[in-house]
Image (tube, rainbow, N blue to C red; front, side, top):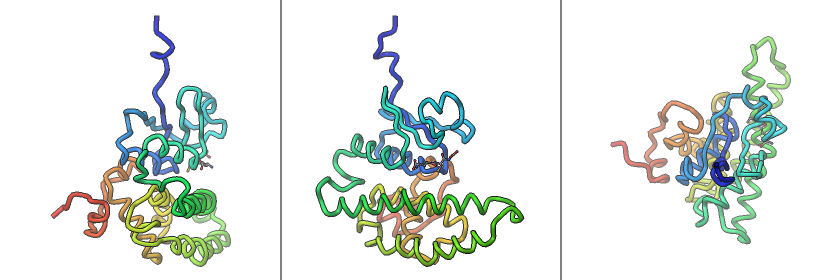
Length: 232
Ligand SMILES: N[C@@H](CCC(=O)N[C@@H](CS)C(=O)NCC(=O)O)C(=O)O
């Protein structure tokens, strides 16, 4: 007879490509934590509404992280918890009780609570057929992005990444809304944000986590910042 231990499924991240679970999956790949110890199960949007998934996450959203009886499904909590578990030497998140940590948490919250929902709502709206779009909403939201959200986000970038020369989890996180902004043609006016996006998008882990074709970015600066093998 199987023991309780044998029956326990491994810790699992439930993920839908190109949603806010993508930066979490990408970070797990960078931390070499995928498959062992964290299993990643890719779902479709329809899968999010099945009885099986709603038992894990009553909101029927992506991401969801389960480990035994633990079931959490707010992206900020999932990201933070996985970093605490799998980034013990603070490669991608500053150590606790440091001023850098406060700045990091502030940017993380700004991305997750303000920037990402705003950009995702606008992006999904613009995917509708033109005659089903609210032109006034698109105009005012685009204006707000260009004059308030993007400049504020960009003002946080010390350069080349948010906290300086070292890439952090918040740089991976921001790549999700920046991917949507780039698709809408709303990113390139913000060179510091565009540089972060290019660097993150150039990593092979991006094409896995976002189910995107391999990067076309061939930027020497990105390669050296991220220590990618030189293509030349
Ligand atoms: N506050 C949640 C929101 C998650 C969320 O809305 N995820 C979107 C994808 S980016 C989703 O699952 N949408 C499907 C739906 O709401 O039906 C979080 O940050 O995790």
